[in-house]
Image 1: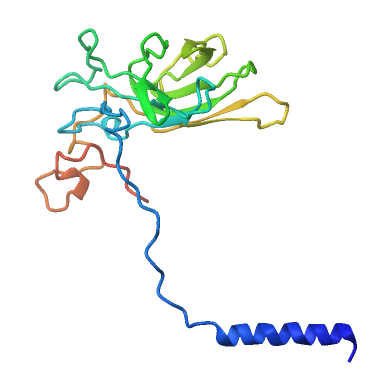
Image 2: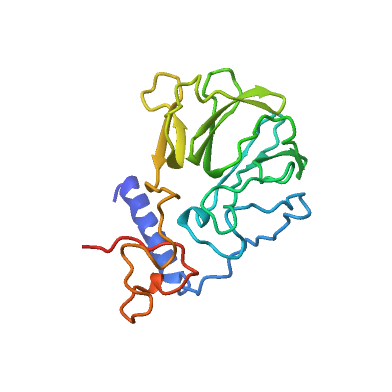
Amino acid sequence: MTPGAAALAACAAVAALALTAAPQSQPPSAWPVRFVDIAREAGLTHPITYGDAERKRFIIETNGCGVAMIDLDDDGWVDLLTLNGTELEPGGRRARTWPPGQAPRIRLYRNVRGRFVEAREGSGLDKIGWASSVCAGDADGDGRVDLFLTYFGRNVLYRNLGQGRFEDVTAKAGLETGRDRWGSGCSLLDVDRDGDLDLFVANYLAFDLASAPEPGHGPNCRSATRKTARPCCRSARWASCGRRAR
């Protein structure tokens, strides 16, 4: 037997021995990772508003919004941006008008060694409305992270001016559509590999608050008193009924 063949045979023997000696499969152990809610200790105590807290009449009140964790001040610590929604007028279909200082706002938190300190004041992130999502990237190539926010209504591009300040450059960037839409997801990425970030925006439903039916009265709902009514139409807890599959 050649030295090479002898070595190969030895390796095969060791492998066979290892397989024979391997213990029988054991039940998986408990996952060693444990998460603990430290929001309050970290300074994150402001709730997010998205429609009436007790009852949702329309689908716009049910979706909620996103957050972003990015280093906005280039100090090496990941900061936090939380979006916000709003409420409808009680029993109405228009967005509520808030008293000064009480409107739910986008909140910008600076990370100070693990504790988040609110830094929204003077940031320029002032839009109030039904925010959906946020994507971040250096849209203008100046080395700072800019923000694109999607909304039910009009989306917004905020240019990062540095030192925690932002400027609404939506129209200047050619992103003003001139009509309301329901923006959902978004992404800043270089699609054509030319070195500049491109923008992808996904849209959700075609929805009009002025004509949306009240819960239980949509075109896909039968009489709410009949047993044949769809389950989502029998209770006012539900905000909408989808189209039937055909």
